[in-house]
Length: 450
Image (cartoon, rainbow, N blue to C red; front, side, top):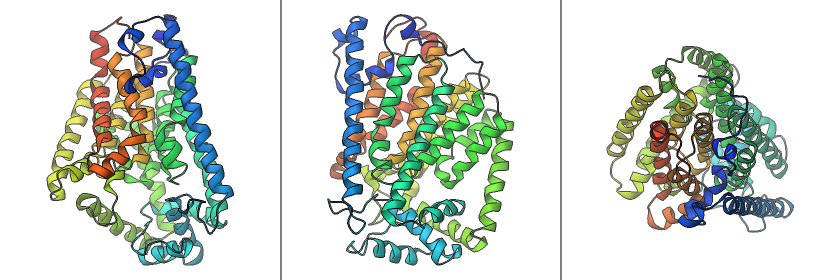
């Protein structure tokens, strides 16, 4: 799945004396007029500085909020009265169960609910945060749960930030055609991206694990280490909804060495799960997954559909109806996307193939929370790198789309909760379609500047 090393040369815009396309993401929210966009490099450079300043501002505010929450915590609650780390409580409870009750009861939802309300007394009785991740993840969580809750959350934050930075380092190494300016701006945009800066940091979600594993797999694949790339992807079995398109795409693209590595990694993780949490926990996990699939398809009073960005959730909020009626078009579009990946990328640029499949996974799925949208970062970076490596400039509409991806999640959750319209799903669907067709567009528009 790799490609030849291009020596880390500058991107097309940098070679021409302009600035990187990532620096113009605010085009998507109207920060540049058409006249300014057509202007010289000085105008673009000024807007890149403003975008970077905005990203730094987001990071400073997010950091200040986090410090206030950690320093002002009382009874595992922030000064605003909400639970510290939000969803992290579910992972802490899973670790507590392993430590105090035995791994066989890891998926005992009644016990999970009891411990959650003990951790956060005063929560409404119908509020639950079930642990629905793979058994092999419980070991590290048990280690974190040996600490008091606030310290455990702080320790997880350090791990999570490290995983995200590690994943970004892998991606920037894999994206050898991007210039230095593009790399700096991309890094700031990724760090100030709402699904990371808010959902993963303040919301306590663990999507950075999948981000790191997929980013590592991309780097290994580009360096010709396909078996190890497959092993890295197997780690994503901690959350199977990360893989419904990636594994079939490897088959369709003939990536047999990567598939062998995936099988080896999956076998090792299955052995760990059977040996540590045990067969009983594994069976309970299977039953819980089936229940979650039903809940994701048909919904429920405690299921916050507005926080999800997959097409299933979009249709559920928009038209309702039985789950099967919504999942049918999702499955059909997923098969169509895989067919297009095979038709367009088999024997071609693996970077564009990775980008298209990862972006499609976020939409053509049963269950994807907004926190998992950090996976769009590898997709967009690979697309930009592919264009730069081919000596092509990214089209203006692609830059507009990147702007929408970055800016929209700050408002679309609130919009979806208030109106039942998941606008961000349409943005991500646009990304998936764009990345499937971008190579053809770049070939047809050779030499065109943004």
